[in-house]
Image 1 (spheres, helix red, strand yellow):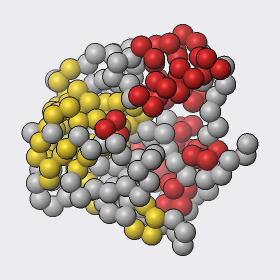
Image 2: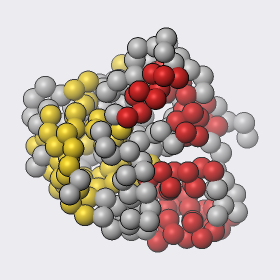
Image 3: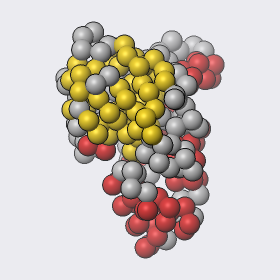
Length: 228
């Protein structure tokens, strides 16, 4: 069974720029915290349309990626747990090692991988790197989101243990890479639509692509503007 230590983090809404607010800066919790179907108690989202919700209750970011970013931007000293807006920081659970639908025990709670993260433009401001969101998407270093199947209390430092794996063919890396780099592959899109564990928003987009043979505009999400 796959088991690893995990740091649990939460954050509050703060100014990100003169015109933007965000709760992207997370810090480790310091006491046991209730995890409901909507996420950790006291963890906030400034944009509840695109962040949070039942299918996006938690975000896990692999520890291994921090070193990769630090090597790319040695002048910055901000690539550490909580920097990417993650609620869970863990080692040994990269996108290549985890699949859509994987179910984990986390403290008293049970959680399930629901989708890869779709990085947004607020990351560009967070790190003062104009194309940071695009880099996460292209490099496949965005982490992934989880839903809560069974609420429960979570200790500040606890363990994450794999309980079951229903879709071993759908690693988070494979799903993210194909979704963004081979977006109109009919067989892949049909596979996504048929995956019961995939988030509703990703299944809707996959179905729309099948019906229209068109890919949604990513400019607003990645850069904060729309070219269309």
